[in-house]
Image (cartoon, rainbow, N blue to C red; front, side, top):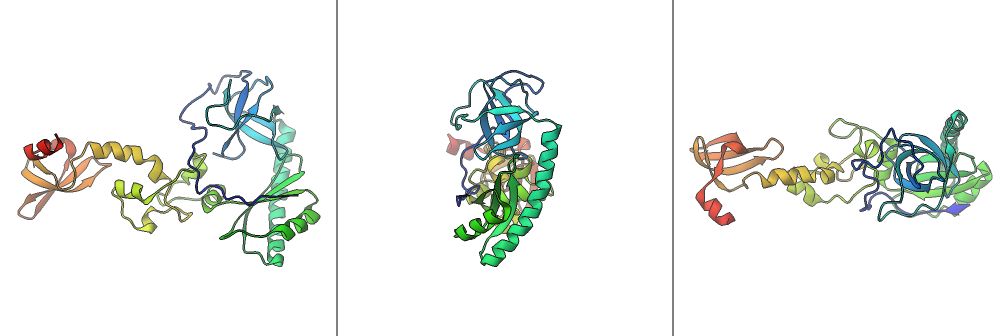
Length: 302
């Protein structure tokens, strides 16, 4: 049995396998030297030697992982592992067939039953931990149980109890709340399925400064996701907001409008609009293209 108590997910700063950078054609089947696999929907990429197996993105294969054989989906086929990625030390075994998928479905059902039994064991041991998911390798010899907890947990006795109950190699792995949301899924404040489950393979740091730069209200309820952390979209949408900011006058700038000179009192970045005080307690909202800076603002910028 092995014990893993590492925190994951809330502090990832590196980006793996950006799907916007297309490597290899989806219709291409070729014997590349390495393949990038994902074992969960939008999961982290792991690189494997192909052993000259002809595969293409989108196909499912059986790979020999550190825990044992498992089914993964091919995302990339390359001649070498991309820079700053862990090297490929394990190999692909074969393309997944009907029996492999049937075996995986059986193991998923078994994992659900296993999780309920494990939850009872946690209660018996009086441990403050929340079990999120149980996963078996394809051979059924290795069981990984993912959990969250507010602090580190001494679960050594629990592991021994679980090993005696399930008769396989047991690993307990502590994850962060962002990982939990990615696994469970749900709808974000925008009404769309969670970005982390749909397409984000790894988490990047998100700071309150991003919300300020995007002129968003600094109300935690407005800018937090279902995981109670700042929303991931604040990070990957920053470039859009940054470009919009550069093209709009700043709040406080004096500008000329079709209605006469005025002062910028608000900006609507995504609409490319500004609200201008034109005097006599009147404000107008205008497209940025309809205004121009006064000579004073132009001189200040120069």
